[in-house]
Length: 545
Image (tube, rainbow, N blue to C red):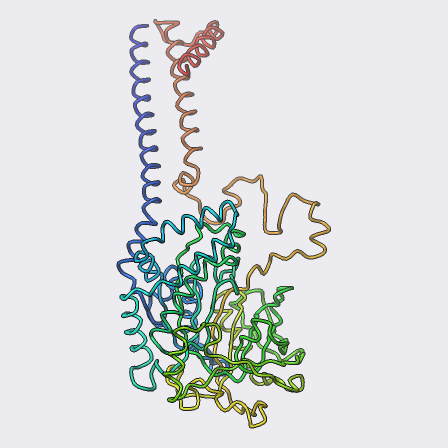
């Protein structure tokens, strides 16, 4: 009987041991498979971008809304086009048309630059060691700007510009463009804006050669010392990240500025903060002039964008001096060729803009109350569509036939916005344009005086952290399946399974030893408890060893 029990015990132990080994092998194989899948994802995305995404797309292309293709700025513009179509009539706005040089073009451009890998390796090493970084960055930018835009990208750019703006004399060759960077990692996100870190070129004429130079200069600007330091500060690595470039048609605006749908300091969504000046918005974003500051009141009935929000009125006005106004240069038939020839060797910084002095600016309101209310309604609609507070760049211009088709007076001149004395004309009805919409950067990152005084009162770093001792099923909302638990805690499940298996073997051993103590009836003998416990302990020790 003892031999028979030992055989049953050995057979049972062997079966459970085989099952345990097989389950462990399946677990290890599954983890290795997951690691292979994770490591293959970047390569798959890279192949997809290289093979399927065009080098240049328009704002209406479906792929343009993907940040991985168009960058933060380009994807935002493509989304704005859809939002403008659903805007109420009393808050209607337009988005100037644009084309986007995608990240696929960026990858292709790098593949044509034979020394790029070696030089970017040197720059990465300098960024890691923080030694002579500024010198290395300046050298790299100068070297990158000498490269010519790949022929395949130039051909696709010409094709897309023609398809978007037309090929006749009034098409894209007669327009001016804003050439702006659109990185996929650090630009226009809620944590990082990279505002002013990379170059933007305003008023670039519609010359294929000049536009190509501006694209190369935009790409090179992400390797400037300021941009690299910004990336290092936010842990962005490596230095060379995917980057798109937006070529957006410029509008000769009467007034331009920036609007925040929540107060950038307090985060109060009941106040829209507007800063504006006459002309282009460059004087506002660069702080070259003291702009007007307006506060528009919004009635918020609930802390949700699903609830309707109504613009109540203009709450405060602070008129700035506005001593400097930035406008676009007028393009005429006589100076087109001369301007393009000069830009082949000249700098692109201010090729299409000029600065003018304005006297008595503090006596004039750059944006009327009517336009402020219309702008507020449009901003509330954009924020509700995005589901977050927004930082919006806007412009007000004389009405034109279409955002893509200029009239004679809107080809880059002053658009009839000023009189002979250089003062702005009255504007009975202006078209509202939205040039950009991005999340307000680090809206909740500022500490109040109370938070600073009481930051050591608790172990919580922020008000959004929660510690709990409750069971996971009590604090996780909704039904929670065993499959979900296994997917979250596979290591824990494996350890528990091992413990249960060992415990089961111990119980089997106790049962077999008990039956072996009395082979006739197989009943448990109370006098053998101590010896059975000792035998079980010895078995457990030997099985673990």
